[in-house]
Image 1 (cartoon, one colour):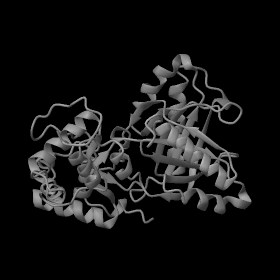
Image 2 (cartoon, one colour):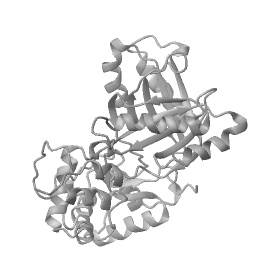
Image 3 (tube, one colour):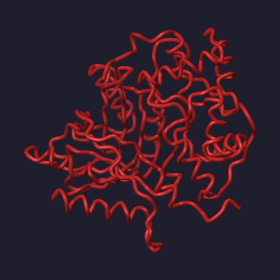
Image 4 (cartoon, helix red, strand yellow):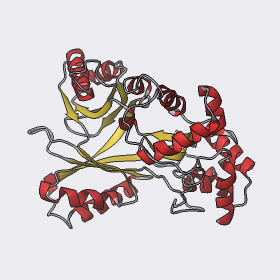
Length: 365
């Protein structure tokens, strides 16, 4: 992966910093977005902004542009899973795990025993007497049968923070630009299932929006819907949590954030609800969860993901997390660890088609 940070212009840096969340959901969103940049001293028109976002996407600086769908609110379930793969069979086991379509991501991580970490994503269970978590367990049983290795299921028990932002030196360096209030006012609903039209919209936008001056109109054409309905539905999904944010999604490896450290902690239950929000408030922590322990194998119940540009920066950030933890309890040497990823074994993304299908009602009424 070529690091492109040094080649980015002032406008590029403004785009990456400003629009990782809170991009306008309006018929011509690049116009108010460009106006917001001009207010911050970056001269650009809506057309120029759209063209440059398209270029950054094609160059690989962005992973995509669009709505970051919150899969767990769409249907089904996902879970983090750890496994030991013997050194002499590592490639074989990785291939066997990756062959499962339910495995979305798989990483090799530094740990003396649990050296393979993957995410299983499933639709709701077809048996009405069971749920998606039962389906995860069925997949893991199949993984164990194929690989001969035991799996350790680590589903999210409590989410403290999900909001990865990768900021650069340049305009809007704090990333604090939210234009999500632009456009029509919407009211969230308490409906859990999707309508068939909403299902089609989710599947259409999951890989990103068209990078044109009228992206929502283009989506409307693709799903045979009115532009106004697409705009109102995406805005409502954002309010309901089905969409975490709308904006540019950087390729953090291209920006130089190559050090991916998963810090894990054995946090006393008595302080967990205080520690979670405190660690989540650190701007370099991109994900923060409570997960279950596995006695005798895995004693950690708290996960905080950090990213850095160098090993030194990553180590400094991990130390900051530890210093904050020490404010709540006396952290011992055996109470924490950092598992750095050494290799991406699979990264296909969580495809939502089946998960959305399993949570779709019979009609739009």
